[in-house]
Amino acid sequence: MENYFVKPYLFKDLKYPFVLPLLGYSYDALEPYFDARTMEIHHAKHHQVYVDSLNAALAPHTMFHGHTLEELLINLDKLPDAIRMAVQNHGGGHKNHSLFWQLLATGGADMPSGDLAKKVETAFGGYDIFKEKFTTAAKARFGSGWAWLSLNMQDDLVVTSTLNQNSPVSEGLRPFMGLDVWEHAYYLKYQNRRVDYIDAWWHVLDWNKVEPLYKKALNRG
Ligand code: MN3
Image (tube, rainbow, N blue to C red; front, top):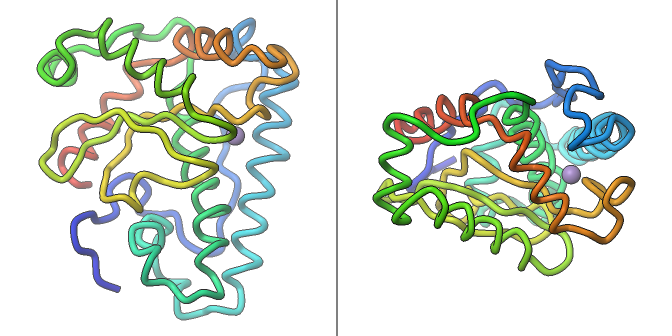
């Protein structure tokens, strides 16, 4: 398949058959911000369904088994009708959550440093302004979706949000940080209070984990 602007850059090993990634930490590791029960259901149930549904949809379409999930999402509009929606929804769900889990820790870095800090300063005029802009994108996403920090084709930082499990890579962006604002991510603990959940997420977002992903996105892998 052709890649026009974006090449796989974060998940070069995500290919059929897809498997649920390990978190690398326990379900209660992010307490009290993210509760263990929500983490378990979110990872072991919701994420697993995306993986299983994606595998089921792709199983008969062997010509796509050699491609990475990022390639499929980047080329979403060129995929056959038979698999496009499954890749968009379940494939997006698998990639988005695979990124989401990697960003989280308690006691991590609460601000970017080095090159990424300079880039944020240049793009947004300061970290606090960026944080406000990202929070607004997450709050304003109507219904289910995600807020994102990505690089665009000119390597500028952009904050966007997407509906459902749509990935920014399908829009020519290279996301390296994302916040899940589906109710399944917070309803047990925060009920309808998405704002409180977003505030909690800033406490478990570890910029030390974001920075290597930013470098991969900047270097296009
Ligand atoms: Mn989710």
